[in-house]
Amino acid sequence: MNSSKKFNRRARVSIETLRAKIKIIFPIALLILMLFLANGFFMVKKINCTLNNVTCPKEIQTTLNKLLGTNSLLINQKELLTFIKAVYPVDKMNVDFKVFNTINVNLSGNSPFIPANVYLVKQLPVISMDQAPSTTDSASWWKKPTEELNSFISSQEVLGFDLWENGSMTPIATEEANLKFIFSEKPTPEIVSSIFKMTNIVNKYVDTSTIYIAGNRSFLSRPGQPDIIVGIPFDEGSLISALQSISYLATIKKDAKVIDLSFKNPIIR
View 1 (cartoon, rainbow, N blue to C red):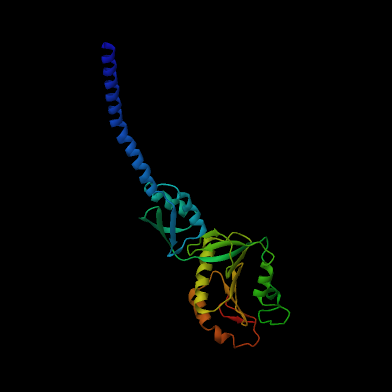
View 2: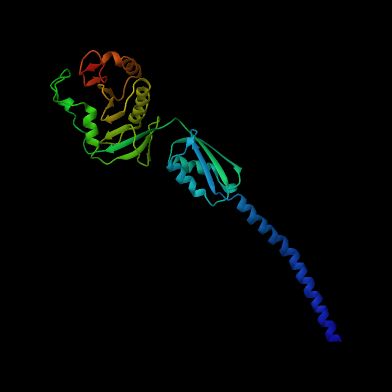
């Protein structure tokens, strides 16, 4: 009997101890389960990104993809903006989490960019027009500069860049662009900024198929029309005035190949 009582007493103690442990462990286990489920709700599975209200370029998207699988509540937005600025010149960022597992990243830059095909060469191409005896020579032996430049770049390695108003050049995946930038030395931010502004002005006043940049000159290709040459840097007021007069200038000399605006007064050749 004594042995039976001792056994029952020990059993009751063990049960009470187990119950006490369960009371402690169960809330902890429940909390861990809830945290696990909550983490699933905030786990980043999709990222929507826009820059100046258009889809973000691949470089930014690649940076943001590192957030996939992380907890959206733990994202350091200040640090994220620093990472993005390292690959693209943006000014502001807004992040919201309106839908579970999805974050929306809205970026704004200082201005729209201009895509360019860039050609880094050992030596700039020699244009036959520059070998003519005088600036008024329109002999048939020299070609339109844009034809020669187009032939030149066909054998060169091309790189993709976005040009920004502040003079930045951001590498991107190579795609066909209307701006062809040929240089033998890395351009300064001032030159890049000048090209950016010149391109926007030209596109506003003249229809061009392709713009070639070589050295300190830009060559505007217009099918069936004389090439237009613009010096870099340029005077904005003089350039706008000259571009507004292009249709008149093109009629002054029949069979003209070039209207050169890189001088104080336009030269027609």
